[in-house]
Picture: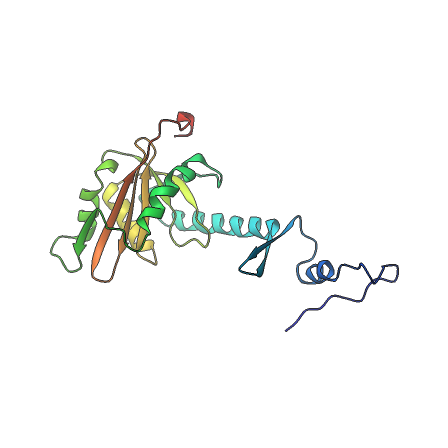
Length: 204
């Protein structure tokens, strides 16, 4: 289906009439801001208004996900422009490289319970009652500060909740972060640590 611009208004000059603007009005209605970005000669339409709606939906979805967890309590959601997200961006990019090597790896079917193995590998979370996590199954990334009632049960709940079997946990006090994932033949844990010297300690 194609959406076309309407005919120019009677008072409009047909030689400088903005047909594209009128067409997008037909599709989206009035929007706060429209930005056009050219990538490989393709024009991508981005609406700040639509982005806000998607972010709001993602937060609602994240809240509903966390409510279902018995051993994790939501403290608050992290702002999208948080300095912590910028800090952890680098190690996360390293984890996701095709040739990246995990810090730890365990074959599927090993006699050791994978949840117990996860917990023993995440030493930086021992005795920690507050975690910084990426809420699983959200269309947009949503990070949350949470209170943990049981380390073992919290890891198990996050793992079982994640549809992709991929969870990310971090500790703001040490700048440590880990990504646990299920690969074809093994469980993998990537770990990293960031320098938090320049982070505002009031935001921990």
